[in-house]
Image 1 (cartoon, one colour):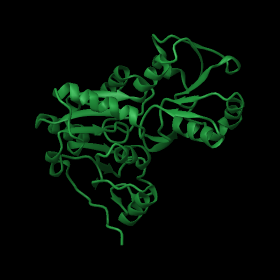
Image 2 (cartoon, helix red, strand yellow):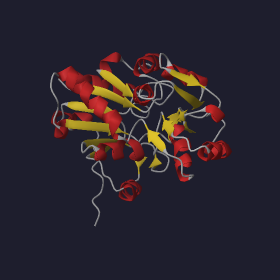
Image 3 (cartoon, one colour):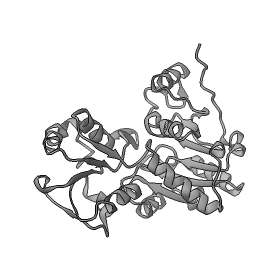
Length: 288
């Protein structure tokens, strides 16, 4: 018989058990339009009590530009110590491929991911690899718009680096597709995909290393807590590196769980069971 999810109303009841928090960004501290002020305050109060917070984002842009975006959305700097993004990991992967000809799938706003790298943009016919950072126009396009292009990429046998493994994210009150949806489709066509972000290990390795540098020592994994709103990326990623996870329901799974502020525990349990992973605790929103 399955055990119902353990709900908590306040992060403060769980926080003393952990020295480091690896927090998701989009869906936890903001919704793509504005900061979740209660979440920001909760993380700030955790830091004030001695905890270290590293934001771990599947944004395809490097950490410094993402910090500027967080400022614009109203995410206070007191909420976090540092940030690691899929963009940072993508840059490291491309550094290993210095001199490569790259075909980029994604919007122009993601171009900063390539600044200063020894790569050359090229047409698909001359590419050595593909970097997917998103859809060209995520306001109107779906992954199916890319099936023909992905078939051409597959015919050339090119490896795709996915700069954002998220399938969807919230933008205000709706969901939009991300690079992960394109990469997953490419994978179903038999293409090779390297995922730069959550739930894969490289981004967590860098986040834990950053926390270690900030604290002056490595933190035992049992004292590390991941916070996120995605079963596929946040919860699965935490399980993969063997750390606890606090799952936030008022994020990308909110609609399938019923009311945003009153999620259905049975549906939630079914989602966890299907994924084969369970969080340490569940909260509707991150509140101190």
